[in-house]
Image 1: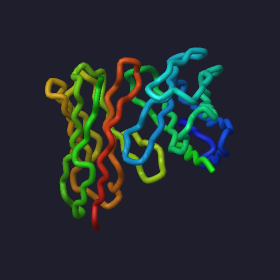
Image 2: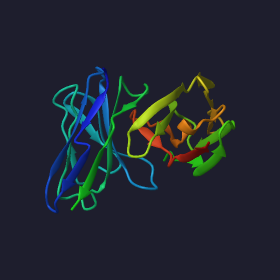
Image 3: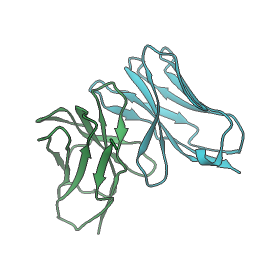
Length: 112
Length: 111
């Protein structure tokens, strides 16, 4: 089955701790995206990558970091600099910018 | 800056009704518009993609229209069913290929 896999589904972070969210796709898509969803708000773009070894900041990149070493993988690290990390995180991919986007099932991150 | 608005924020209808969800955007220079469905605690499922050169797309009981000049799109759901209950999200493509989302319409279809 082709698709986007996010793991873990639930993640708990202690104050001051870095955590990494996984996103893997087997759709052979070039473009990958990370969004954050908070209650009552639309999805907001954190980072995106249109090609391997290249990525750009989105609207709310502060406190986050990414890497794109392989076409199929785009992990997101939530650093201790992110002051309000509790949210639902969604990864997406598309063949290229402008094509239909497909989403993973999300990771719910909670600070404890 | 592109902004996307969805009206209404919530909608409750009896089963069998036809309904329309609205989406508006401030910058008409879009590449495409996509409608998604989101069930509680889940990811987004793509419903329909309308390219900027198209006026509408259809899939089963769903029909989406696009009027770029007025900055509007509608999602028409025919003969609604309880299984259609979900949040529906509209998104337009930004200049970097990313999507800019509205806040969604939460639909409840009562049996």
